[in-house]
Image (cartoon, rainbow, N blue to C red):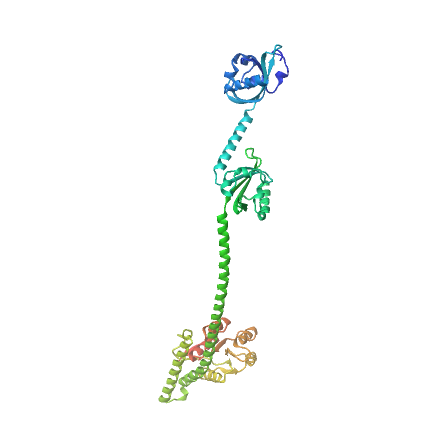
Length: 492
């Protein structure tokens, strides 16, 4: 080296350079080394440093090792130590490279070398080492199997949990390929998951795969992968695996049970539907029978009670008391029979409470009423009722088509309509009447022996102005006629 004050490569080096005596005195220090030790000039530093071994190294034994290597090898390469900044006593890390300088006689004259501040690098290395120790401490005590592999699945680390989960010692699995542990049917899904992990596009959900145990069986392991390739403490893809065989087998058993239960439910549903259909068929048959029975019983009762009421209410007949008593007995017997019919057919609630207690008359002076009915006795009864209690002109038609034509031709004030007619029924007649502009506003009252609750509900829903059941209660019919024609009702 040149004398102090000269400008040489020694002075311009960006890292520290020095010359020191064998006994530990500082002989030369370039500007970078002066700054490293916290001094302003080489002169100040040389005056301050008396013993490098005791004043500079945090561990004085490092100087002993440094000198031992120099004496043995003649040089020291990449010698890392923790030292004090001489002036401030701040602890830093340095890397030294040095060699012996001998005289002509071979004796050691002094040491020359370089000093590089590697504090930041060393602290990163220490932090990395601490991180690695924590990682291993966690994985080696965990019940979860931790595996570190590269992007192709080559295993670099296996935690001790491999023995408990898979029956293999960790060392046995090192350098194997993790994909080869898997059931062939699960490899594609695992590779797809790995691709998502490498692209940081995985969902964070576990992937369940079958992994072969040392005994040859397959265990279901839930695997969660994390891309740590860029982490210097790990440098790989971390796989955390836990045994979920019990859960998976339980789920499979539950699914099998669900399939069996669903099959049983389907079979039972078929049985119940069959039973329901049979019950509904029986119910419909019962309803049909009751409906026919109701119609067949009520039709003759309509004549019996209807004509009886006409006899009882016609003052012009001049019946003797005995004859009037006989008519009364006829009406009482007919009404008792009607009550029995209603009770038998469970229809008492349909007609109960709906019969007026007194005779009424309709105050009418003109107009006509049309009765569409195929039963001649019923026609005769209603004709007598209309003639006895009103001044309406009575028209009748036995066939529905004839009744429709008569409605168009005569345009009556009111239409009385039977339901069970030959050809088309009363509902179709009503529909056609309502569809024609010249008949749509004519009031229509249904008179039917179809007295089942469903029949009455259907009739009211169809749009009749009223729906009366046979045997017809004459005061009830006269009141309905008055309401339909908006005529006053007079009481006797």
